[in-house]
Image 1 (tube, one colour):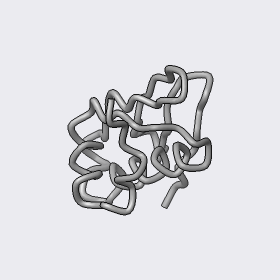
Image 2 (cartoon, one colour; image 1 turned 135 degrees about the vertical axis):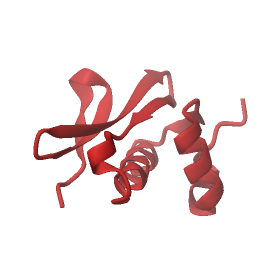
Image 3 (cartoon, one colour; image 1 turned 180 degrees about the vertical axis):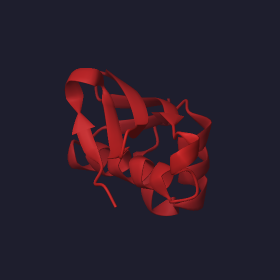
Image 4 (cartoon, one colour; image 1 turned 30 degrees about the horizontal axis):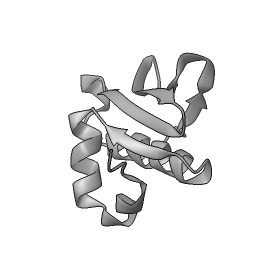
Length: 92
């Protein structure tokens, strides 16, 4: 299984598998990271790749002391299922 890579120049995390690429796009603003879009191509679905992207993004936020705003429904859902990241969620 391909690893999640961080592509800061493109403001995203990605997983490449064969010719397909799954992505988690973010924006930075001050001390906050905004997760805005997750996209997993059909041929990559059902392999837990979306969850791996979300986890990588949240771990990046933790390591860099960033607050999280989940504008992406997938990441919002992931946060509900993984309360260990609740301390990262921005209350603003």
